[in-house]
Image 1 (cartoon, protein in one colour):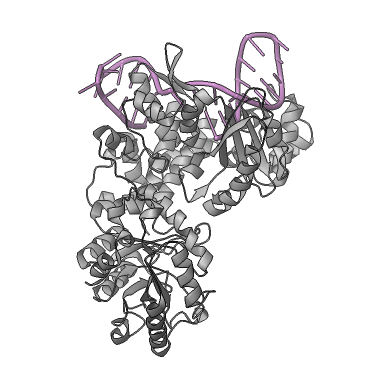
Image 2 (cartoon, protein in one colour):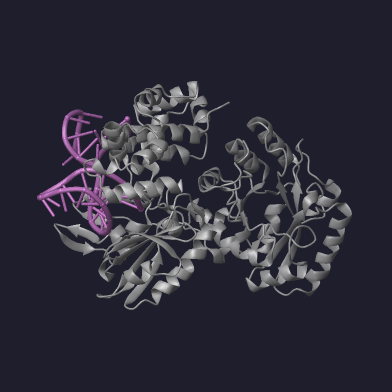
Length: 573
DNA sequence: GCCGTTTTCGGCCCGACTGTTTTCAGTCG
């Protein structure tokens, strides 16, 4: 069983945690964390890279030592260095360190002074009042530890889907905007970068002197616990468990603060380094030269002082955007208004909720010039999938409706199942009568990567294959992607004139950002679609567009930015 | 442990808040 990137990353995360407890050089620890993060965000598998003879040290943050350690992990499945650390330090210390308010230093002290090895021992020590005796610990720390242990998990832990974060962020921002003296309220962090999930919500506020916004924030109806409250920063936990950080800065610092709180952290560190080399200090209050503020009112100013053009939030992941900005080769990112239509939608004829007419009307309201109706095929019986007869009837119904529609064309389509042997779930004679075929895997998720890849490539051999629907099959936080050689799929699609879908369902977001970036490099075009099962779900397109921007896509990389005529040409293979 | 348009050695982003202290360590983002 080949090692997945995430397994290599987890080993490095564990090494970093143990080194931290061990009191190792902080920069060495950072190197392991950085490598873990980089590896888990690669688009292709490290195993393949090694097999193809690629030099791992070309990956930023991976030097000779870490490259060698990766090779050992790939060969043997484990890392002797981690084994050695685990033999000296109890694995349970990692759980202790995950508690809010407990870091490596406290975990080390608890182990060394009191012999505490796991959460169970920690609980007993806290209950018997032994923890408060330790230097730098006290009654409050002890009480906090006990509360954390009893809860069983860290406050605010676990990531939320972007759509869930929106549900909380929007009313909270409206509420804060009404607070006296408040000028601007902007969600920053991974939310602004449109990451598919967010760990916590970072909200930036600018206001006049003497504003009461901090008290209004901690007094918000939905707050369950105030974790900390200061003049410029406060942290609360909402009743849903979502953690929210509020930062307040003066107007002159707005741009610097927004840049800082938008992150990502590696992007910020890289920008600050460039600043340092030019003799500037950059923090959330501005850009400083000899303690004099020279910029920071806008984000553009911050970038300008380090000699860069503005970089869109979705690109700020330190994945090459700074280098391309320096060279002036950043793409002009796609916007929602570039899209001419949606190419994957369902109606009440299968498992959708609205009629053909209702879906058409919703598309008109969005200003689309086309909408593809792509109900399920017969194989998906739980969704009342269409057989040949029912599909023919739907084709007729669409023809009739198109005669009466103004400004919108309904495209006759299907989401047809790719069967286990790589054939499609309906005969060519009926598929031929359609404008578009979205082809998806809904069964046999457990095939080996080789079998799954060949199954899909074989399906693509059929000249009627247009778009591979939700290509990886993952459901965020509930189902892993099936094993697949995505690189071969993308190259196969490119060779055959097929396209890959970016499915905008909030828990799919499939393809991932790193895959989209790779698709753009390979030159395979993308269909950004919602897979809407309800007319209201057409609005999910904002998630897809956010994800597409994170994948560096511009309007030219996407098929449904084309006019109807242009699109029809692309769909004819 | 990584990295280099000052460097192959000596740096490595920067600040807020809490609790335990009485000037600061630890944690967090």
